Structure formats: C-alpha cells, structure tokens
Length: 249
Image 1: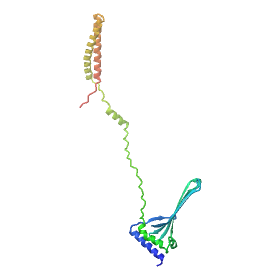
Image 2 (image 1 turned 90 degrees about the horizontal axis):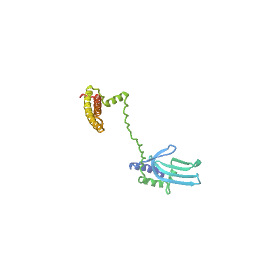
Image 3 (image 1 turned 180 degrees about the horizontal axis):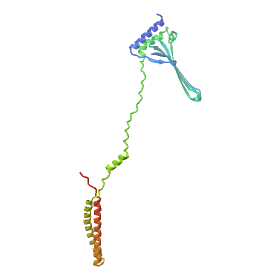
Image 4 (image 1 turned 120 degrees about the vertical axis):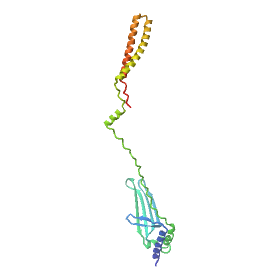
C-alpha cells in the first residue's frame, strides 16, 4: 500500500469516526449542478481585492477555497467567488459563483510541506475534534393573519313589517263614548257654575264700585255667569267624548 492509498484509507476511517460521533456533513453545491456532502478539512485560500478607480468605477473581489472530505472518502476543492463592481451608468453589479472539483493526488501533496500527504494526514487526524456538525438553517413560519369573523347584517324589515311594528307601538286609539260625553258634560257644568259664580261676584263688585245702577250690574253678572257655565259644560262634554278606551283585562 503506497502513501496515497494510505491517505485514502485514513480518509475512510475518519468518515466513520465523524459519523459515529454524530457530526453531520454539510452540503456543497456548484453552479453546474454538482453537489456533495462532507466536512471542511481546511480553508486553503482567502483572497480579497478592493479597487476604487474613480466615480462609478470600482470593484470588490473575494475568493475562498476549501478542502472538503466527502461522506464517501473523496477529496474536493470548493471555490466560492464574490465580485461586486460598477456597471453601466455606475449601477452596482453583484456576481457570485461556486465550483466543485474532485482533486488529484498531486493537488493533495501540495497542500503542505513535508512528506507526501503528510499535511493532509495531520488535518484528517484532527478533524474529528475540529469539525462542526452541520445544522440546517431554520425556516421561519409564515405568520398567519387572524381570522376576523364578520357578524351578518340584521335582516331588513319589509314595508309590511315596519307598518306592523309601528302599529304595535302606537298609542291606543281614543274611543268616542256617549257615557264619557255625559259624564264630562256634568263635570264641566259643575266647574262652569263655580267659575261663573266667582266671575259674577268679582264683576258685580267691580261694576258697583264703578257707579253703575243695579239693573245693569245684575244683567252683566248674569250673562258672565251663564257664559262660564256654558263654556264649562261644552269643554267637559268634549273631553269626555275623547277619553281613551280602557282595555279589558
């Protein structure tokens, strides 16, 4: 077994150790559709360059390269590039690219100094203690708007229903009662007599003081008394005639 085969055997045993420890691999995806799952052994490069050449003429560049041990024991390099720069009219342009490549033995030898594959072997031996288990990003649930229940509108009363409601709440009709008229006439007559007597007395005294003769005073007071009696009788009769009817219980 040569040095490269020994490295591949160590890689498979390292994958078994990571799996037994419950350290989950993370997914890596390239723009061409290539996807693998594995662990980042080491970040091999991290380049950044920012240039400002004047108004509406600038560039921001960054590139990272990771050495990845896949879940089936292979080695890949994962390259991710960000290039932000000014475009037509000074508008910013954002570019992002990703690439995966299955690396050869020569690439792995060049990872570090020393004997062939010595640097990668050292990284694999440390990986079970340095690797971070992958945690998928949490997806926030979409908030659900509260359901608002709208009470149904009250039914519109028909024209006949409105008439029935008005008739139900209307004041009771007044009955035209002959008995009421008679009683009212009697009451009004008594009130008219009382009012007439009082009016005749006051008027007689006033006219006597005024120096009028007895006949004139008598006729005037009599007429005023009769007017009061007649008015009281008429008012009493009309009021009795319009008295509301009492409902039978």
